[in-house]
Length: 124
View 1: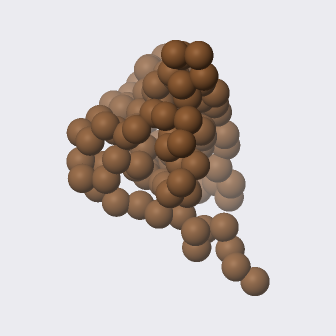
View 2: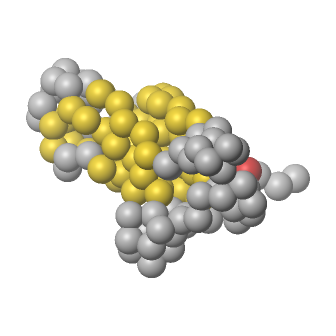
């Protein structure tokens, strides 16, 4: 049986337009709000057409020592040229953490599948 994890692709977001870019500080204060932004195509623009687009980005946080990650955000991008309307692949959320851990982001391209990235974050 295949695992979904076997289908996840990754790479350096500076050279691969599908990899989600996690914009968050490396250190935050416990239980204080900070902006978490996730985007696609920061260095190399991803197409945003009906034929080729990012459908969604999901963001999870795995606290150190915990068994499972927690879903932080789910961004769906629905307009890909219908009418002349386009949705850019950027999501922003305000987050509070009480524990250090790892932020994971997954994105889905309708042609090139699932992509992942992660970033460690320290809570002081």
